[in-house]
Image 1 (tube, rainbow, N blue to C red):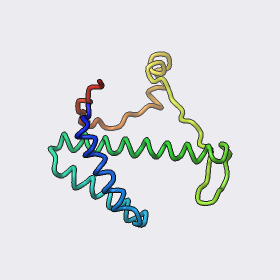
Image 2 (image 1 turned 120 degrees about the vertical axis):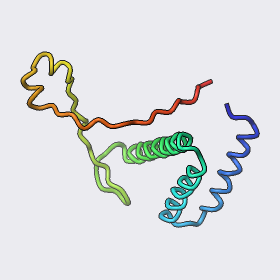
Image 3 (image 1 turned 90 degrees about the horizontal axis):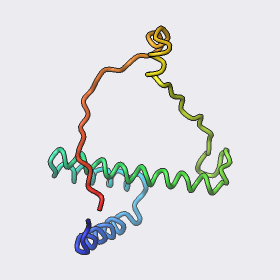
Image 4 (image 1 turned 45 degrees about the vertical axis):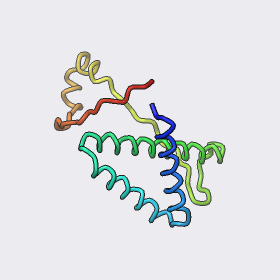
Length: 130
């Protein structure tokens, strides 16, 4: 859990970043923020750097979704070309229950299902929620 001291530090850093980027063009601000993440993560152990970059990515992804939702709401969910953006309908993803397919239709399963190469994944312990 964050303490008042750590919150003040976060707020002061946020203020400094906001002031530094106030009149900076979007492309330069984006490059500078990305480089800040790279530089900060380089100071950490690999496991901490992974947690850090995942946390940053998660916050950016959430902000991206929130902004997209606000834009769609601003045009009442209507598809079309607008000033600076286009709203398009995207079909949902299809899914297949491969377990049912393999047990009930094994010949079809063998013909149509393929698996990618196995790979390694790094998992880090998640922070405990208070």
